[in-house]
Image 1 (tube, rainbow, N blue to C red):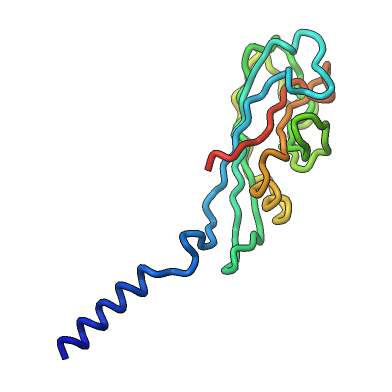
Image 2 (image 1 turned 135 degrees about the vertical axis):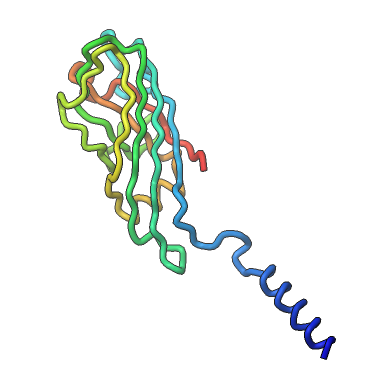
Length: 171
């Protein structure tokens, strides 16, 4: 009887320690990306006094996955910080675009900032935007290849963008 109990205990410990996913079980944990924003990275080139600033963005995808690990829904947040820009810059939009570092690609995820809604009164910005819907396919594409995506922020003076940075995965 003691051997049976010991064998059962060893088997339970062994089975619990042996999983077939090697630590890659589906997870609903957030996936975090960041990008350093620079006017020098913009395509087309930034003109005027907006060439002086810098910034950063943290972009987080909150996926919902099924038992097979497929993303079934997702939302995103943005934390945008800008500094050393001239006072009075009027933001006309901020987006995730598809494209490498030498491409001006299409907008895929908008922050929802409307033209004139945000003005860099003193040349700085520290803003959080939450609850942006992201399609499952788009979330998966960004997670699989963050370097193929960039964030940029647009202004009245530079409608193509005044600060840009390629995404890189943080966690």
